[in-house]
Every structure is written in structure tokens, then in C-alpha cells.
Amino acid sequence: MSEKTKLETIAAVNGIASDRNFGAVVPPIYLSSSFAFSGYERGGKHEYTRTSNPSRDLLAETLAKLEGGAGAVVTSSGMAAVDLVLSLAGRRDLILAPHDCYGGTYRLLVMRKEREQFDVNFVDQRDDAAFAAALARGPKLVLVETPSNPLMRVADIRAIATRAKGAGAKVVVDNTFLSPALQRPIELGADFVLHSTTKYLNGHSDVVGGAVVAADAADVETLAAWANVIGTAGSPFDAYLTLRGLRTLFPRIQRQQESAMTVARFLAQHPLVAAVYYPGLETHPGHALAASQQDGFGAMLSFELKGDTDTVRRFVEAVAVFTLAESLGGVESLIAHPATMTHAAMGAEARKAAGITDRLIRLSVGLEAATDLTAGLQCGFAAIVQPSIAKAG
Ligand SMILES: *Cc1c(COP(=O)(O)O)cnc(C)c1O
Image 1 (spheres, protein in one colour):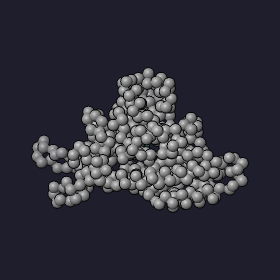
Image 2: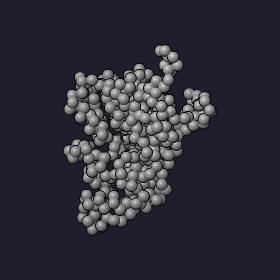
Image 3: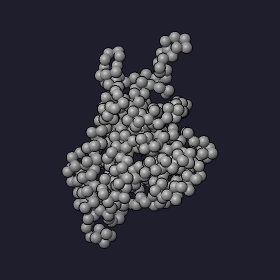
Image 4: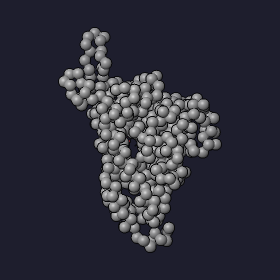
């Protein structure tokens, strides 16, 4: 494939028809944990699957091409990918993280800080003064998540990367919510891109996995060596499935975001909804920024119901088509209540600081017909008793 090959072509066919043994069109899966040496001190390209494996390496190569990086390391989960990047920081190093980062990332940072493995400063990166003060402390890494989970706040990757680099820090962007089909942080100045491949990249809710893509070849080597030391690599079978899912990433997410826009507009005009958070809406404060750094607005959104926690309970239990479950990015639509599900581990105080209320509901929009999705939400609204809403609203 040439330099100019479109990314959707890379996703669809990278590695296709490359089998030299039988001409298999689909690259075969190599489950072997070990690979034979051809003789004394003559190991081949692969020796042991913890270190490298053809199936996993093909996924890593494809992800690196899609993100525009020098290479990638495929891990056994998204959290393993986050932890792998954190291995770049030592005991005296400071890490800057968004105050509203993914709950699991928040917990990992806090627990490693408690063990004094590094220091952490959570900061609202849209607050210029707070961010400047944090940068003045000389961080080693600056973590960025955009759009944020679950409030879909948009952070300016270009501006953050410029300022962080000026302060001598490397920039890590968690691109799980958009995927390289809609946002490529390395083009915007990031040094690393993180993924929970569990979400859009695999896209079929049947694999837990992760990846780190690095812009710089030396960083790829460092991460690959560390992944081998701690044994955090993903399995060949999971890599095979994830690559299979990745083949359809572009058409999936394009269709999903069209439906997300329909759902967002439906919610925005609904009298029982207090607020809708979707960067695709012109009213979203991050709309223009999202339009400038993303190729689409994605298929995640959240909204506030009018009412109390009982209203929320009735709504999520009565909704049809959407399944009440954690995770996101699959072909099936999911509904989640962040305060009691995805963000429960964060604690009430940190949730409050991040602006996550008990009436906030998050949606991951799948591939069902948009009319079925709005009809499913309508079932939830129908279950809410009108008088209590009128009082609360
Ligand atoms: C899910 C998720 C993770 C963690 O990934 P796992 O595969 O569940 O370990 C990290 N960051 C974001 C933004 C996520 O959505």
C-alpha cells in the first residue's frame, strides 16, 4: 500500500492476501506460544509469544498505520495499555491527568500514587491558569481524554500538546471514544495514543484488549521491551478477533454517529430532558473545537433527566432497544448510569468535582435503525410519572 492509501482501505485490507504458505486471503491466526530456532543461536523473527507473535503484530502494525505512529504495542486490556504508558514514569516523576478522566484510569493513577510509584496532579485542562500552574511543576507525562467520559467535554489537543512540549512533557491521548476513523492525535501533536480496543476498534463486545501507539520509534521499543518484561501483551486469539472487527471500523462508526445525531436531536427537544451533551449539537460548548480536530462527532452522548434518582431508575428499566450495561462502542446500543456504574469507583466527591450528577445517563449508539432507537427511549420516558417531573423541573 502506498503512502496515500486511504485509512479505511488500510483498516479493511492491511495484511490481506499476504500468506506465503497457502495463499490464504485472510491472514491466519498463530496461536503457538513458541517458535522454532533454525539452529544454534539462530532464532527467527518470533521466538516466544509474550515477546512477539505474528497475529498480534499484524494488529499492532495496522493500528500504528491508522494512527500515524511509528509502531504499537497490543495489550491484554485498555487498563494494561494505560499502565504500560505509566511505566515511562519513575518515582520522582509527575503525571498530569484530566480531573474527569475514565474511572478506571483515575483509580489506577490514585493507587499507584499511594504506592509512591509516581506523583499525580488531576487538573481541569480547559482551565488555562490551573493547567499552566500544573505544567510549571514539570510533569513527565500529560494524559488527555477527549471527548471526555461521560460529559463529552472536548479538549484542545493541539494547544495542550504545544504547551506540554514547551514544558518538556510527553503527551498521551486516550482515543478510545473516537478511534482513528474520527480523530488522529499524533497528527495534532501527541506522542502516544491509547486505546481500549474493547470498544470501537473491536466493536463487537466480545474481546477485552488495549493498545498503545507511539509517534517515535524509540518509544515503541521502550514500550515493547517493558510489555515483555511485565507480560502485559494481548493474546493472539484476541488480536485476531480485534483485527476482524477493525475491518469494518469506518462504516460502523460512520453509521453509528449518524444515528447518534438523530438521538441527540430527539433528546434535545424532549420536555423531560434537562441537558444533552453531544459535541455534534451546535449548542455544545466544544462543537467548534470538535469540528476542527475531529473527522466526526462520534456515537457517544449523555444527557440529564429532569427528576430524581427514582425517575432515573424507572427510565433505565423501561427503556427498550438499549441494554443497561457498562462498556461502549459495540454494534448494540447500551445505556449506562455513570454514578452507580462506570464512575461508582470514583467516589461521590470526585464525581461532583467532575460534574457527574446522579441524573446523568450515558448512551453508546449502535447499529440499530435510528427510528427504533428513539422509539426505545420513548418507552423510558413513558414510564416516568408526569406530576413528579413537573414538580422537579
Ligand atoms: C474502557 C476504557 C478504558 C479501559 O479499557 P479496558 O479495556 O476496559 O481495560 C480506558 N479508557 C477509556 C476511555 C475507556 O472507555
